[in-house]
Amino acid sequence: MSAVEQVSGIFDTILVLDFGSQYSHLITRRLREFNIYAEMLPCTQKISELSWKPKGVILSGGPYSVYADDAPHVDPAVFDLNVPILGICYGMQELAWLNGKKVGRGEKREYGPATLNVEDQSNPLFKGVDHSTVWMSHGDKLNGLPDGFVTIATSDNSPYCGIAHESKPIYGIQFHPEVTHSTHGKQLLKNFAVDICHAAQNWTMENFIETEIQRIRDLVGPTAEVIGAVSGGVDSTVASKLMTEAIGDRFHAILVDNGVLRLNEAKNVKKILTEGLGIDLTVIDASKEFLGNLKGVTDPEKKRKIIGNTFIRVFEREAERIQPKDGQEIQFLLQGTLYPDVIESISFKGPSQTIKTHHNVGGLLDNMKLKLIEPLRELFKDEVRHLGELLGISHELVWRHPFPGPGLAIRVLGEVTESQVAIARNADAIYIEEIRKAGIYNNISQAFACLLPVKSVGAMGDQRTYEQVIALRAIETTDFMTADWYPFEHSFLKKVASRIVNEVDGVARVTYDITSKPPATVEWE
Ligand SMILES: Nc1ncnc2c1ncn2[C@@H]1O[C@H](COP(=O)(O)OP(=O)(O)OP(=O)(O)O)[C@@H](O)[C@H]1O
Ligand SMILES: O=c1[nH]c(=O)c2[nH+]cn([C@@H]3O[C@H](COP(=O)(O)O)[C@@H](O)[C@H]3O)c2[nH]1
Ligand SMILES: NC(=O)CC[C@H](N)C(=O)O
Ligand SMILES: [Mg+2]
Image (cartoon, rainbow, N blue to C red):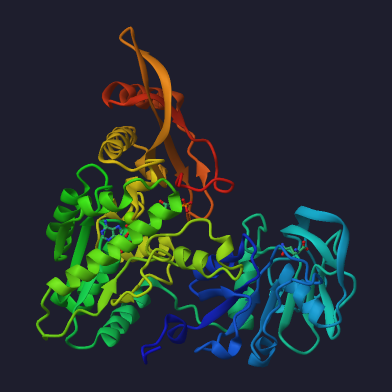
């Protein structure tokens, strides 16, 4: 690492150690909602390798049993940090396991609501949360108090619903305060972070802009120039705006037309970014190169890796083409990578658990020459949108539905050809146009059309047709890590289906995808 400080070195930080619970990232989000910076790292994180000291540590829940041979365990050095520790569910069981091993299988799983009875009213952890509903999700339980601990809360089912160390600020709770079903969970997390850890509540996007611009300047230095991968999506636009504020015309934004963009996208983005935001944007048409590299490829992961690699090659070529004023080569590439992309790639469960490779994280070239600058790497999408608004980016752009870097290539299932892309693109344009007309664009988090590699029989104008199927997808979500499908009016779906079949050659049938994430994902590939 260079001398440039990380965000965790600048803001008071609560460290969340992730044992693999599906809710772990929510702990981080909740803390940030009351302006405390929190960062999630795998539970196997070596404390000696941290370059910053947390104000407190939270051990998350997890799917394992602490007593199993292959169960993950925390680095014992965490207890030498001498900062407050809160164990949640598996995290509490881990504390108990390390202090007397009194953990075993419960007679039955406890899943659902329970009422919290606070036994020690003077304990700061439970200020204002007595008798509230808490959410349980566990099969293991404590068989007794860990050595040196006392009970501070119970529930009907759980004599050890909350425990605390007799003399140190170490706490365990059996329930999940991070899920909204725990009605006062956020208050509990705040009690821990603010009253027990004394973390400063200064994580605001206003403060972030200031520190981030300084951080970029320190990293880039007084003369170096930077190229940016800019798609016209929210993330890279916000990142570019920050970069332009930090280094002005030493920043060169590049939009790559990869042949799998939406209808008229390159033209529209060029106009909005240059005219509207004063960002110096060059559009590079690399569509032939991308489509050439994708020829014959049907495997989704292969498509993603090919696209990620091709992007980097285009950027490296562009970096060589631009002649910086200081006579040096361009060394930096800006990307709009977000925290959820990073969270997915830091899983301690290893690469076998990768669900899909995001082109800008796992799809990068191993031997790439450019160094990455990712100013939004620590932020969630809603934080980025807030940042965008503060930077004066229009409401319309800030609230655009996300569009993945691999674009229509992962929405044309099967082989990606120019004609298949055209079908998906035209169907998508009709669908989005109707969504806008119906005034529901902002109620939906993301919507798009996919072209399926199956043919189906139809009848149009007394003629038999035998053409492909379009699947429509629309989801509601706050963080894109879980999502639900959007409940359209039937009349709306009817209209869109009719328009697509009538107006897009090659489509005989339209379906609507009604799967949530999980078990499905947002994109089809
Ligand atoms: N066509 C493109 N040209 C240049 N860079 C791109 C392109 N598509 C994606 N990228 C780069 O990949 C990053 C990740 O893409 P992603 O779609 O997650 O973000 P975004 O496009 O900036 O925002 P959004 O999520 O709202 O679409 C972008 O921030 C950008 O740096
Ligand atoms: O820039 C991107 N590069 C990618 O490779 C990529 N894959 C998925 N996505 C977007 O991520 C969100 C979650 O999608 P999934 O549930 O399909 O993983 C959704 O918003 C997807 O559109 C990507 N964005
Ligand atoms: N949610 C959790 O952390 C569960 C912990 C542990 N796997 C149990 O079943 O009790
Ligand atoms: Mg995008």
